[in-house]
Length: 106
Length: 413
Image (cartoon, rainbow over all chains, first blue to last red; front, side, top):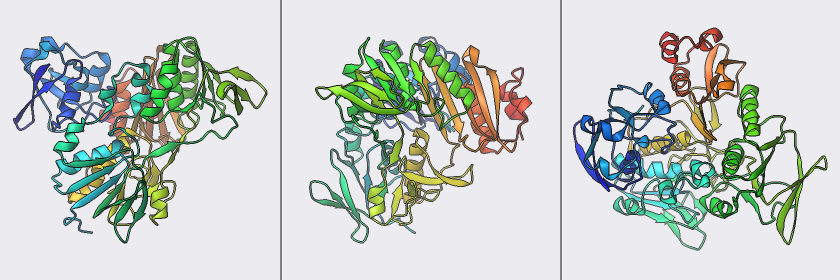
């Protein structure tokens, strides 16, 4: 289990308890967190689950693999801490993870 | 028509479009009752993994569901599962249910989806012959997906080829039968067909194109052989049928709602009855980037029409309509498709299929209308945007790999 905090583009925080093994995207969808569309359901096919990872957790979430990185290159307002949340797997190490959602996924 | 007084929404069919409509209606502030009627036992779940990661055993069942059961309770959505809707009475505004009883609606959303086309040959009802559409189908198929078993797949469309890839990875002996002279004949260009045929062959599947199945035969009621029209006999422990799907339009048709290869809708997913909407596989909608109506069998379409219906019902502005998009996973190949390629008059190859990373662009009168991108997200994502803006591109620009897709998109007009 890990507590994940989702911050929307207006700064509102929503904290949920996520289960190990599910993705940060899945935890968001199951808890109706706004700002993440995840149209493809986690197949890394659509780039609509873009989040900004809090700098303090960047070493724990790891870095994007090639496929994910090339998807991110075409997302709007990409930053160095951008990730697709379907590619971040929840584990105890991510307890307290804070991610911010962009204004739009399209 | 002003629907702002509507208090009761009934949704027939509990797939992706229905799940999206439920979520969007609540997100958009609809506070009335929502009743979701589904003929399967399961709450709405994702279908794409059924022929991919879930079939392979890499994805737990609970991860297929869009929302947990508690969400429907929290959102005050009444789920009526394992029940078929049998009739729509438009004057009484009721939906009859198969075991008796009915529900009354102010607004009805039809998301009845589609069903597999039945195999029209003798022996199609033998044990061991399966469609691949529902969770229940995969539950029956999966225990039989054992290394060394002989699997015959009828139909080399996306479902058939995805299942072939899973089966090869699990160690089954796989034969794919395709009536046309190439795989994916109805959905892609000869270049892509040839690539996928080569890939499956290299992975050990036997692809038989131009193969007409005459019958299935068996012993003790179980399938053991597939017999082709030319007399060829292929041993089979399992047969998977993937020869296309048919839209479930009968309920709508019987209720007098306009249909033509799908339930006809406007851009807001509304049918010719202003209180009835249709979304997903069962609907034929305006394809705004192509100037025609059509039925799309895809996740993108189910999500988008679910949202469009919800927005129209609550009186929100119409959400932007995206360029149609699709994907397929086979082995380590990710095929991403943007647009609809049917009416192309020219194809352009970018990259080398031998590297397993390339794209085929489809042009019509110089305008980009679609792309098939293999392991190439930039080609997919850049094209998606360019298709929506109606970009005209020279073939030599698209094929020039010294320029990135970002550069090409930035220069496109």
